[in-house]
Length: 177
Image (cartoon, rainbow, N blue to C red; front, side):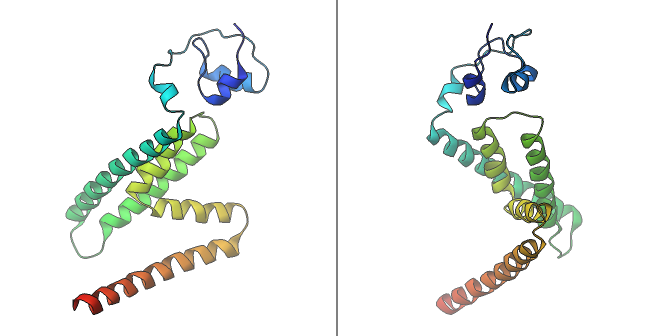
């Protein structure tokens, strides 16, 4: 059986393609499959439409938001006190997860873009946008752009706090809080 490289790049290998051989076929070394994969079902072609990408992100965002609320509340109740330990735990876990998934998805694991976006932008974006901030800062540091990394951290934190302060003051002025 010949391996259709175009099918592999679309992420819809025909029945009979082994995932380890997908990488070999992309590098031009494999021409035949030895072990069958599970067949792809009717859902796979539907995910090729751009609207489904948005739906996966939206569904992931809803799930991530619920998980954020549950975890933040649970950790805060366990810890007690006034320090926002629940929020800190969510932010650190989100950063850990987005770092891990980014390494895995750019390395050994082939994943369709829709699924990657659903997991990172959707679930982790709903769970915490701090994970995206952490990843972007890490990417700047990793590429040697230390000045931009420091600027990103300073501006994001500083302007974020300033934005909360300004929004609070506007609400206070408009509604007499």
